[in-house]
Length: 293
Image (cartoon, rainbow, N blue to C red; front, side, top):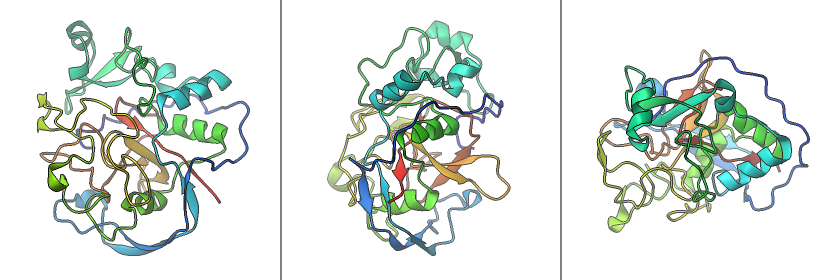
């Protein structure tokens, strides 16, 4: 597990139960016809242990996908309609990036030895993303975070949608480009323009936020890719439906986040992948929905 992702929680948690659900609805989604594309990468800057390669031809059928990650506003509608409690609420804590915390809370929160920039903060959850006293009042259009795979699946079930498969996610994220490193091409900042929300500076000490944001950005920040999808690189990790591999107990996460940096975690590349346990959550982990046609 890379430092831009928190350690796995692997604590069990209660069964997912969502009262009432909507009929399947693809309004507002990007409809893709599917086809055959080259998935994966042999990029020398990739991570072989993540099984990014080899490059292989894969065929995906028609599907629909959200142009944006699910926002705080959309998740609030779900919670208000169902009374759903997230895994972070059930456990009573979740991981928050230490730099976002006041000194007293930072000092009182336990940290994993290998990734001490993460704090296990009691009382943090999607509506209080930096713990007690924080709120999303100025972030309704930002991606909802502190969402486990189980939480994301529950939302999708209520919304009449589902999580994308990993193949669908990469097909959509590539935006019609063949083997490009990023959703917009091979250059990270073409013409000096930032195209995604990642870390600039020396991690984890200083982020100069030259891309415009420290922490999450609105889901429609930056330009979309060729298929009209926003922020499939950076901003927040996005859950996929799949297990990481045949022996894994983790679910796939794609896209990287605002904490990714070339010095240690360049997983904002479109072919990059990682995983976490289905009940894990953190301040840089969200999702977007897909649907059958």
